[in-house]
Image (cartoon, rainbow, N blue to C red):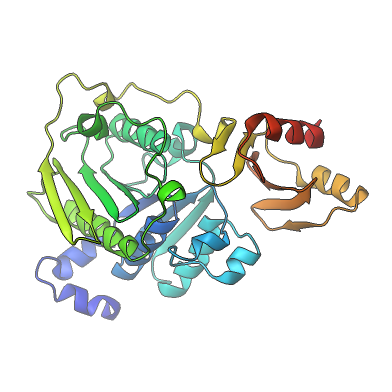
Length: 331
């Protein structure tokens, strides 16, 4: 416990609180900007088990704001969850860390419903957040909604079935991320601030008996403005229902990824790298392979094919154009 000595000296945590943190399992959804900082803080603070879930790989544009990744990770196109897992193991080998390279959806999260104590939303889209809202109420798992873009951040702790939910706060959730970091960018200095606040709220949820969840926080780190608002639970809110489900996971949709010059597809089954590599070798196409994905250039486009069947086609946001290239390769 010497590792946590300075933390246990804090009266609001103490030895008893530290011992409690070491018993908790935290599922971190998204290990990008907020998620990489939040995961590192959780690892250093001594939360007993971290489960890291992310569907993407490390790109050069991530290095400005995603603390656990290196240039080598970007060169190798390492899966974010795996790269974060490797980095965190070097930070704290006394806790348990697991990683999953997959989309977060009802199907992929159900196996963890009984094991996990708390969820951290570190995602970048409202389709996943809506699913998390429904998943948390279905299995009564506390979670913390967090988002940031530009100089602004939003945070709200949610404790089913008692507190207000994401729909109580926002009504109908946005269909597109008009204020995402892919569209308007993000101030790198904002990320550790909001991640620290997220983990601070998580710690309070665990240790503070009278913790109140019905508060929504806003932060502007350029003007140094911080606001908090009380949110009432709506009596007729459909988002608080434990029966709601998402029929089609976000990652299984053919969709243009805003601001990334990329179209996303999903194969009907898991990828067979051996078959794909056989064709690439026959056509003398150079490829990069790691445990999570296969990457290669084809007709001036770049394919990223994940083990779980998710496919990213870089080089266009035009879905019709992307479909032609996709079908040309796979059919």
